[in-house]
Image 1 (cartoon, rainbow, N blue to C red):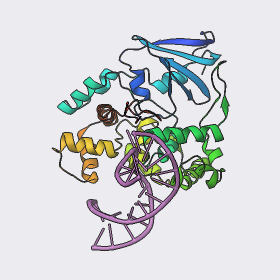
Image 2: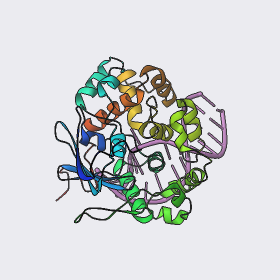
Image 3: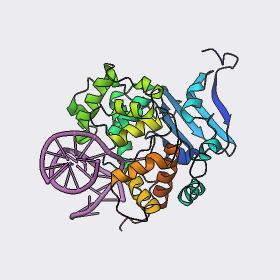
Image 4: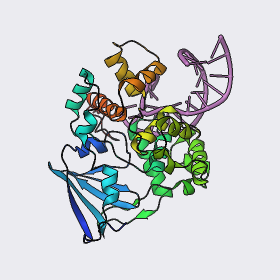
Length: 306
DNA sequence: AACCAGGACACAA
DNA sequence: TTGTGTCATGGT
């Protein structure tokens, strides 16, 4: 664990990397705590505040306290992943070629499993902007303060399963999560007690890992696959949400109203070992075309009435 | 101002 | 196995 002992602690580090679109990646609905501040993105990874900016040839990272070991960030951003190798595993079809052209440099992150899972438990029938709000309130009320540079507003970590397991349902509802509150609380308990071991998911095959997550209340196939893909290192997981359902019907079923089950089964054999990456490209491309990517509260694309 | 949102669940048939 | 109503909340 002392592999980087030769490095001096620093507040800033530059990581050379090609084909990495930070903005697309951080706003593509896989993580919910990133905020754009000027030309940079600010967020919290684990218990650290980070500011990221993306010059053409890499990513510059700034933290609040000097660091020598940056592996946590390399891992989160998946900087050692060869995008070309991933994309070469895609089926060579027109829909994917188009999505690749529309979202060059889109990546998958490797998030904390509990944060990702809990966030997606809160996501059901919620718009992404609302998920961000709910997660934000959850963190500020039950998370722990993290160190930030002078002049930056205080921020908190994502609350642990142990913490959320002992928060009352009413206090959770006060974050605006509605009927999802009992799901989050009960799932937090099962994770906190070790009944479900999130750390083991990466070692299991996809079906076994999914079966584990499906034991959690409020976690169905879609949310399980989100946690598996965005956090648990299962590259073949393929979350089918309303966007992907509509998109796949259009692109692969000639617009026919095929059932969700049929679309799921199609996705299981068609997209291959990197199906999850394919999903993210199709999802982000579709949302981008619909003008839904940069949206936040108060964004109305100039349609506000006088 | 209605409509609907990165679903899950219990309950039909 | 596949289809329907229900569950809170608030942005658009």
